[in-house]
Amino acid sequence: MNKERRQFHKTRQMAEMKDKHTVIDATGCIIGRLGTVVAKRLLMGESITILNSEKAVVSGHPDAVKARYTFKRDVGTRRKGPFLPKQSHMLLKRTVRGMMLYQHPNGRAALKRLICHLGVPPEFKDKPVEVIASAKKNVRMSMTLGEISNFLGAKHLEVAV
Image (cartoon, rainbow, N blue to C red; front, top):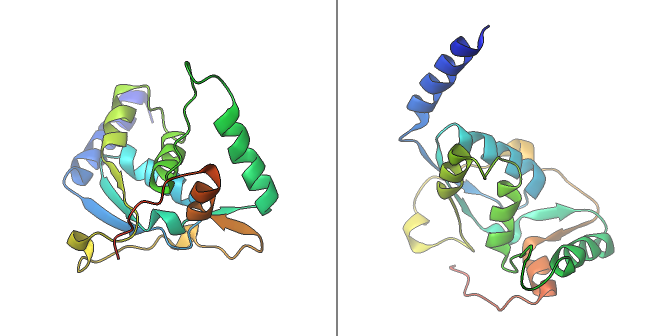
């Protein structure tokens, strides 16, 4: 299939997804697996809202996870960055950002269509919520994004219940 034909199919698929808005629950999902699914759907033109960001899971030994996020926080300078967010919903958004070409116009537009929330806001109480089954996996050792953000020193934000 030549390049023009691929672009035609991609444009047609994006037109179908233009008005689609999905609400996803991140409870118990591994952030890497969740991020790949979300990034691909965002690039196709879908708008996505992620709920319960603080309950998403990072797999690995807790000491190794803490060391990795400590290094990400301490690398660079305060003046020039890179700047790592401390809140769990922003950590999830940054993880998704790392899985797309956000410095290109279509990546920037895709990232603007992503909204992450702590807990479940009142406007999403009665809406149907999608669960990504491929992102759920039982892992022996893991940490939630809420625990990581507390470790990084995030101020306790009010979680909508």
